[in-house]
Length: 103
Image (cartoon, rainbow, N blue to C red; front, side):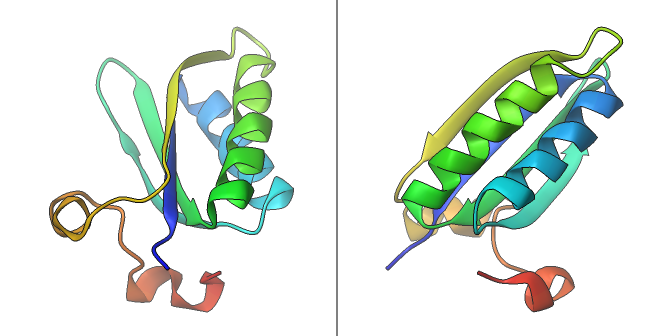
């Protein structure tokens, strides 16, 4: 069974950290990507079972929006069943770096 992907985009670094923290605490998910998008916007991606990813994204979006001062959620989305060609191109795969945290 393939794992779902959830991504949150924030404006600024503190909301990204708050979102990542809330997501891994709220659901049985693995943080697979963290990076700078553009214009001080950050991306945080998680993988896990679809229900867990939905729960984690809900917590992450709330945390990003309420991070003072001026925490802002830009966007978020969930891909319940990404095909192999998406996994081979985008940085959403489980890597050796996150191996001990795999769900």
